[in-house]
Length: 146
Image 1 (cartoon, rainbow, N blue to C red):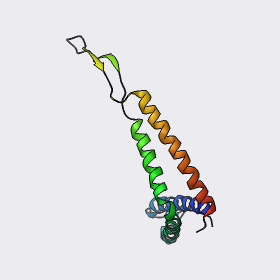
Image 2: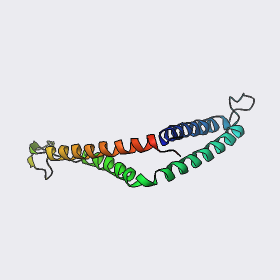
Image 3: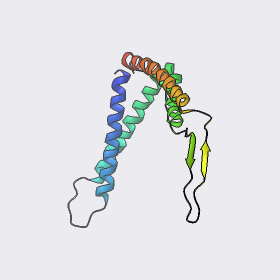
Image 4: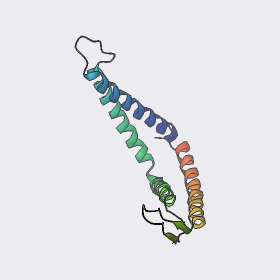
């Protein structure tokens, strides 16, 4: 199995785990005499089996990804950095403060150290780097077997 297939299987197992957990929670306690759509004890056995499969698969993926682990971490951190950059306020120019009940609002002059266009250019640079890394990871995932 190639990593790309293993990643799809991992996601399927995660969805199955969540579904089993929801069934166990939903059907564990019922009003006496009402039928259960699922047996929580059987679902728990299936959940345990699925979790073990997931652990085994994640371990194989991690071992196969050792040669590119740095790129995986870099990709994650660059995405986090972009998320942060997009939150930096870049307000500039005059802006009135809110008016008080008894007074006229005061006008403030805002300035930003990192300008909007600088921030946007940093984001574009990081997105370009992410694209290159993602191509390498896609290639690795397509070519590498576990």
